[in-house]
Image (cartoon, rainbow, N blue to C red):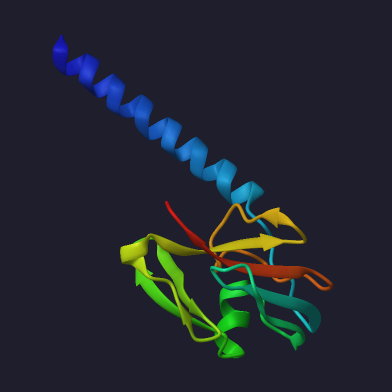
Length: 131
């Protein structure tokens, strides 16, 4: 009897996981092919604006844009790439520093490799301290 309950629990968990993946794929941000003009702004840990430039790009994700313009350094994990440096400024993991991304003033809900580049958008990267 316990084996049947365990089997039903596992099947229910698989169905929930499949449903969540389906929702993710249906609602994930869509990339935009072709030429775009965007603005990239960078703030250091002190809050100083160290980079503010309008860029023309064919990149479809922010990660690809930052890489193609040599603006960022990345580290790869099982969850994908994450930003470790921007414009030569390294995030110090010992000080719990990390790069925060916002688009047109709104906090990014996904990482740089899933964040679509859209024409006219302003991407702001700010070095934050504290997890």
